[in-house]
Image (cartoon, rainbow, N blue to C red; front, top):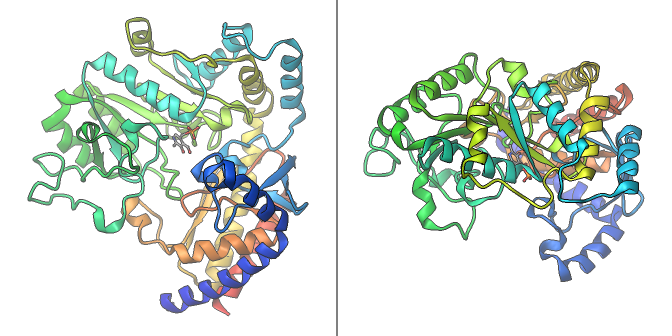
Length: 464
Ligand SMILES: Cc1ncc(COP(=O)(O)O)c(C=O)c1O
């Protein structure tokens, strides 16, 4: 298939669909003009920005959302993976109502907080947890505890992975192709003398230079690179952090044996293996990646889906490591374990996201992925689908991805054309090609059919 021709076609579709989207969303435009005076880019987080403005939402119910112009969509954005419970789930609403009536904040631990901690420990098979308020806080605090427990400073992360917006891990998240260090290169580009690591690229301005040297970058799905690195530097490395399934470049699944190899290497080298399950936990299986791949880390982080839509994060693991929060590793926060989040999270984990729920999510996910794959096969466009419980995606590269550098071979122009096409056909999507769909327990087969039909229409339009 002629890729340049496809890109040109995608540009035409984007242009046309974008015009339509702007016509359908005059109130979003108005709100943007008001918002941008008080909020940079008119939004509360850079990830919520849009070009020339975002579609602002008004409300949601079940699997659907409505924008401020009254347009209705089936929601596959899922609040970046939070809304596996769907919108306004009666069990979550009831739990929140009850708390609202009885005091939503004390900064004192309540029985609900203890119950939520028990539910998280049971579900993910860990000894102890601490509750925080976001995925960022979870990885930030877990890393501190790992550093305290090992008495070492450096951390290893994967190229192309995102672990939140605190300084220590905001490196090489989306490095541009021309700034990538070449592996095994000579001439000082690599971060260690064996050349097993990539160069460390800050992903934000404002990160102190003094922090760069403590974050070492390696490729995903390459246990040999970690082994080489540990051989020389294990005595400096506190933790190896990774998303067990990379979910900020589409979806990249671990090769068979890879996660276990990392666990073994960490055990041998006195390094804390830290799973960032902020996106996997609560979406890809009842017990997240730990259950799905059968490998237990020393510490893990959760957020997003475990709160049932409320503001939440958590990290936990082996008691022998968690006990460092009682031995000088600062771990605290005014809102940690607040009743509102605890009630919503507890209702989500114990009443909504049951084992049965994952069967439903798995069935719908496969229906969606297979439907999209059929459309890809019929038109021959360079793309593939990934199916992983409540999560899945279309990536615009023929072969599945194994790491970040494969992601750089995807064709973003096709994604951007698909985004406006889908939104104009009532399918609400995340605006970036690094994201994926999220299905909720309230989605039905009809909702899936709506996505598949819209996507099939898009692929046909691309090759017309
Ligand atoms: C894997 C991963 N870790 C951490 C975070 C940060 O979570 P939060 O946005 O709640 O701070 C994200 C956010 O998307 C994430 O995808």
